[in-house]
Image (cartoon, rainbow, N blue to C red):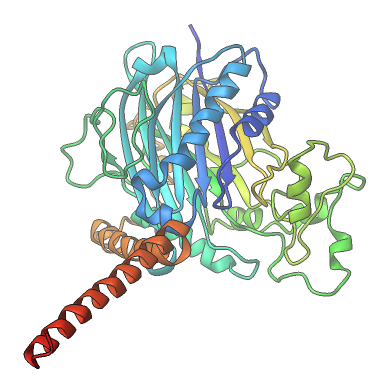
Length: 452
């Protein structure tokens, strides 16, 4: 019997473009060992679709999300025929997460909770986070708790403080509500409000738990947007200092990485850890690089960077280590990061996808016991989160969702071909109707003056 849960985490900024499933699946499969299939596949997707479709949601997002469903299916097929079931998909605006489980482990999913928060303009979901918390049955019938958060924070080199504030608002506003289930043999409809899996046993609590909880593992993946400089590149030759395959010394850029510095100072992503970075910066690649990626995966000769952004590791995967009380109670257990890397550039985005393969002990995290060192337990971020949950979280999300719908409708009518077609049809219909009315009025006037 397996002693660990093998989890594949993927984060990808889709640049509002439809994915090419075959290319994505091939590059993903090439990066994974064929001998060991992940038990869970968790996807964090940012800028999943144009703003109109993302904010309106529902059927408008299906073509975009369905392509990732196809990519996971194709990658599993390439890895010895592994079959995965999409157990839940959620989005908040332009950020989405998808969870897949091996078909033979489908019954191990006891329950799922989900939540989301916007941290963009007017707290809408052009930036934000969506989270899943699931219970996975282990050998003794207990449920291992796993929390997965997909996030997208504020952009630009100079917006460091805003990114930290976005993280704080995610902790304050991301709470998890129970869901219910229906068959997952077919891809589920992609509605924020649709219930998908059984309720969590603690659903009677008035206050849903937040991002940090004492008995849950925590994984964070997304375009966190932390850069390698606090200012934008300047000068006509600055880009000549950017890293390339023939000179792969990444240390000067890693030394100025904002996320590493802010983690060390405990100003963001509190308590989380990251495996060593050994892959090239994941952003920002040029249009020329994207065109090249459509025909070749060879990146040994050049990395084509956009000249107006510093190459940076915007796309990251972090995790919360086991609490000290668990390490003392159950020695020799640990979370292992087996692989942490970036996939080759996709032709549809200026970001590289990033993946992490992790093994998590099939052991529930026990609640802190009553020991003499309980004071040390209280220092753990699970017990003492950096920010309190906003008591108005639900009200604020409801208001922001209404704004998203309004913006989504306006964007649909002004920015999409089908929306413009609707506007044109309404205008033409109005003109035609006005012409008919004018004609009828003219006939009546002629009759009144005795000309007919």
